[in-house]
Length: 166
Image (cartoon, rainbow, N blue to C red; front, side):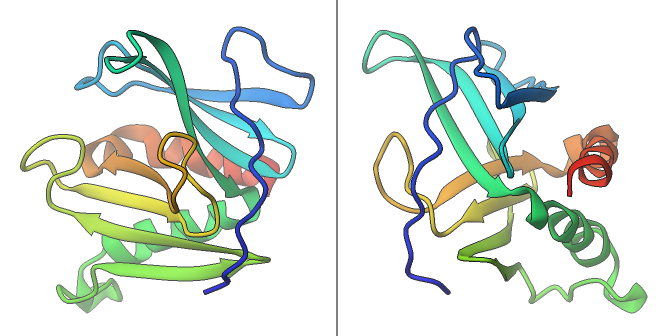
C-alpha cells in the first residue's frame, strides 16, 4: 500500500457546482432521509458527496469520498464476481471478506460488512487508503453501500458510469 496522502479535491457544494464537476447520479439511502448523496465526476475522480445536517455544528454540511475513475471497473468486478458470487462459481470464500488493489498512487479496498448503515444490514465498505477524511482528517475515505441497494439497480447504474468514464 502506498503511503502517499493525495491532495484533496476540495469539498463540492451541491448548490454551486464548478465547471469540472458533473453530477452523475443521486443515491437514495432510505435510512438517511435527511441526507442527499450524489455521485459526481470531478476531473478523473468519482466523488461520493453527501449533504447532511451536522448535529455538532447545527447546520447543513458536506462530506465526501474520492476514488480514481479507473478503479470503478475493478470495484464493480470485485462486487459482482467476488462478493456476490458463490465460491463454487468463482466468488470469494466465506473467509475472504476484503480485497484491495492499487490505482496509480491510491490503494482502493472493499470490505464486507454485517452492519452497513444500520444494524444487521449486510453491505460493503469501499475505501481509499490514500485520502484523508474531510471531517476527521484521518484516512481512509469510505463509502458504505448496503447489498440490497447494489442488487436493486445501483450496481447497474455504476456499470453505465464506468462504461462512459473509465
